[in-house]
Image 1 (spheres, rainbow over the protein chains, first blue to last red):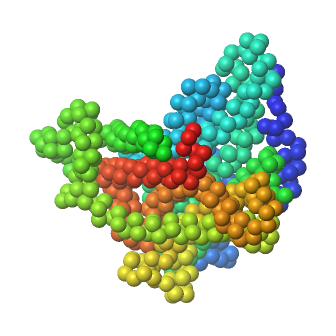
Image 2: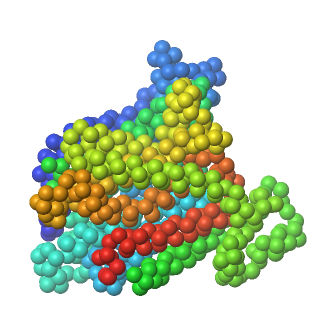
Length: 289
Length: 305
């Protein structure tokens, strides 16, 4: 049997508190809408993201012209490119966050549970890595191993686990003192089983909160790389590369900057609001009074 | 205090070494040599190049050579710009990045603390909501979106401010604002949360009970402890501003180190990229060390732990 203590879990109270937070609810709805649009949009549209239409280069947005968001300098439909780019951005966000969760939770839980010298050593490693200019290392990785989308996932995830490790460790320290962990220890359950069945499940709440806050950071990193031309490669797009193309042509075709920028900003906004809301809902101390 | 400083220094050194070693190993792990071009070179030519750049020595020796050079401020030759050294390129670009970054940092800290304090003193009132909403925007909208939008509005449409290079003081306004915005927003949030916390503490209640004015409570008693989290955020903030300067220099076409870095990255100029990573890495580690010392000065509790 897995013991799940109420404070860590996403209990009914937390959900109720979240529902009262209007910004978080609106953000969740908007995010849902963006996800549906990004997944379904490219299927429904008559255009493909790589298809060029040389009769309609830099066409402004219009419903009648068939290009809802207009076209870019190669006559490609911006609506489809924005949504297809969103697929990449969101996928990077979710996958890289999952990688960072895996590493961070394992690292933090082990450090916090074992304690003592091992904990000290493991946390020193986190401190040292924390002080490094991580974006520059990601760029160095891209330069050295080529611009590979898979590598982007792994690289971002592998350097973004530090916050998670710190938070998980803190939680584990307090969980370790709970009676059900002591009971498991007393009955001779192995360390690995205690971690897997008693500690990690109870971290779910915190992990959900910080995953929600990690996703926007990761999306930001990916768009940053793509903006510099080090992320996804043509003809594929991501919100970062679209913003970059838009910023080059913003004087003649401002829509190329506005739509991808709007999608990117809205998504980051919503994740941040939702994450803040979740954190407040789970941690009554910080709730605004 | 001296002991505290020494222990902090002792912990900064492994970080420094790690930064250099990691960058070095990554570059050496790269598939293909630095001279792989479309043109095939003759074996003799390749041999000569390898010798000239010491690529034929065993790795540990190469690493020691690199470290030795580093201590003398020599980051090796650039593989692409054959006529100049990496350190020369850094010496060319960094002053520009430093000016922009330093100004952005000042702006972010000064305005961030002011806005955060204001919001905390008017908690849950209009000003607070306004500051919080603006800071959420600052955190969520990346600066490579903010910067082109600022240029579009203030330089292209309204024509109030110039954008493009650094010919006059007015040219600094837009890039510095764009660079400072996310950090300003974050510092405002930090300050607000910290100030609210501090104002609840018993010694502030005591000060109130003694009838001190609100002004002296905030400025003389609450502000210093409030700033502790802000001080410890200065390290990450510097890293973020250095990172941000890479895109800002790109957008505003400034001849800073960030632009060299991106060009080096796109040209696969290993030594240049590695040189900049090491340079910024060392800079950040040293800055963190200074911040730690500052923290020790501000908070006497830390010193004696």
